Length: 273
Ligand SMILES: NC(=O)c1ccc[n+]([C@@H]2O[C@H](COP(=O)([O-])OP(=O)(O)OC[C@H]3O[C@@H](n4cnc5c(N)ncnc54)[C@H](OP(=O)(O)O)[C@@H]3O)[C@@H](O)[C@H]2O)c1
Image (cartoon, rainbow, N blue to C red; front, side):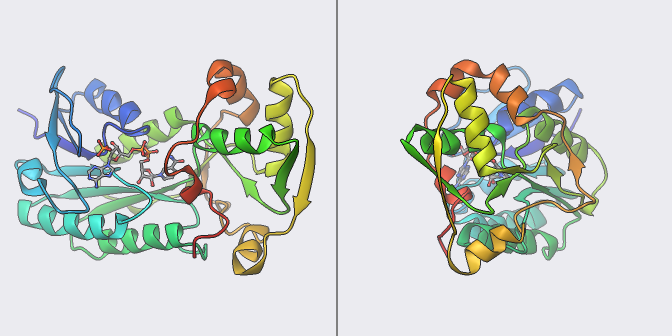
């Protein structure tokens, strides 16, 4: 019998794509979230809270591999510490963490929290893999859409993204989870580095509109970090293949109606120090 792979946050945007890949590879999967679903199709759902440290011992029973995806705007560092402590007790042999590109370089609270979470995992005494991922297309979409709806679309100078497809992120995470621990692996980003102005223009064109842009500089250390591209992956990064245009074409309905998700602003924030 397989020992189950524990996927924290397996009900989230990325988790929903990873879990079926792990199942297809023959793994039993246990998903932990605060609001679990009924167990079905080889996927067991359990309740727990990584930030509060609740339910972790039970979730980790008999588990050798953990894919830690659960995250939010706050507390990911605390969650990582709680998970490491419980995983060490449970004898986990491979702890996989998703992080964000630029975690070690961007002077923004969200990135600092992600870096602190990485340090908890890397220093926890359990063999680990950490993958830093750029923003998902469908994560950037609500932000660009909101900007593009304004008569004069705000487009900070030097603000660039390299959005990546959730399917490509899920495939890489599944492969890393099923392989041996590899430490900090090359970043994963999309195929293009796009100025936010171009993202707004391309988005507006798919909606049959043109938009006038208001360019301005983001002040201070945060603005400098974005202009220097410290939120962007380096030359060693693995690149996905789905472009922004291809994503918008494939998701035309969602593109027209997507609502910002609660943590979106935190992750693409230009403030929040
Ligand atoms: N989306 C991106 O562009 C992107 C880019 C790079 C890195 N990441 C990172 O990838 C991870 C997953 O992102 P996502 O977009 O899939 O997030 P998401 O859609 O917001 O899903 C978050 C998941 O975590 C669970 N969760 C949140 N807080 C929890 C807690 N305290 N205890 C237990 N479970 C909790 C949620 O389930 P419940 O609400 O039911 O608990 C949900 O399953 C996050 O760590 C995020 O920072 C995301």
